[in-house]
Image (cartoon, rainbow, N blue to C red; front, side):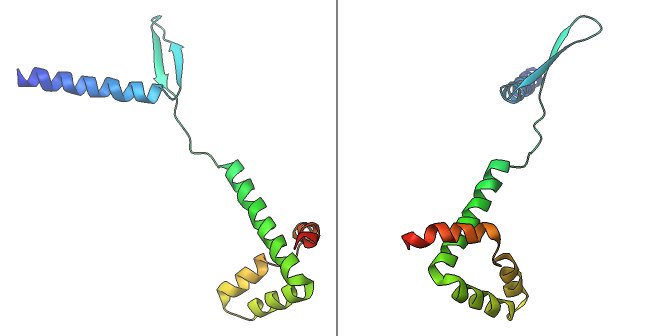
Length: 113
């Protein structure tokens, strides 16, 4: 009796797992014997492009805000100080270099600061 109950419990778990996977999408195919078989779609982890774009826009906005607040000379001085520091500081200085896009953002934000 216990073997029958365990076997049924195992089959039930398998059906529930397949149902949960199929709720996220499935493919159906007709086999050679005419039987229609439904299989869950495999989810491939993708690159979150929207999140990366928002992160980049936020970084450029922050960089433009700092540039507008400090002014071009003060900002260049701070980046030069970072460039003279450790390896991590030098990496940060490379990222924080003035580029045309952040300079444009700084010019647009300067009247509001």
